[in-house]
Image (cartoon, rainbow, N blue to C red; front, side, top):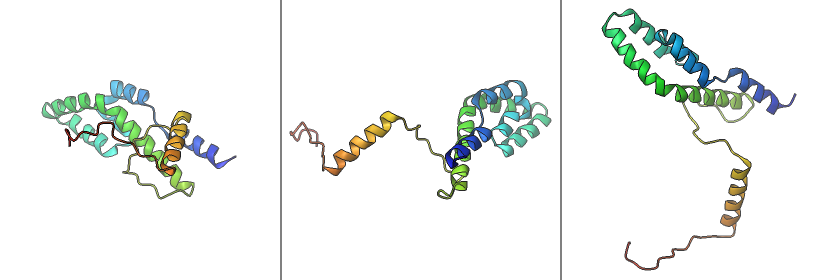
Length: 138
């Protein structure tokens, strides 16, 4: 089995789903299960503790759960990027940084062609010329 295939299998086995995160939030959100799922153990424990505190804790937990409604996609994305970093480090790549988040979008064939064209332009010394030669806006 090739290293690339092993890496892909490892990623698929360890990555998380936003849909499952939302289902956990909907049905078990009071217990912080969605945060445990996303790898946010400390805040999951904090939500459990708030559940044990009557009135004030429940109100705070309610606001926190409302905020989590919007935070779940980012938490899952951060977890999946950390998984990629760990797999890359295990494959002999650069050292993984668990706190470092890579927000670049996936590279498509069009992106590769665009980058190749830009590299060609850079190599021949392409410079963008100003169309407006007036000094009105300088």
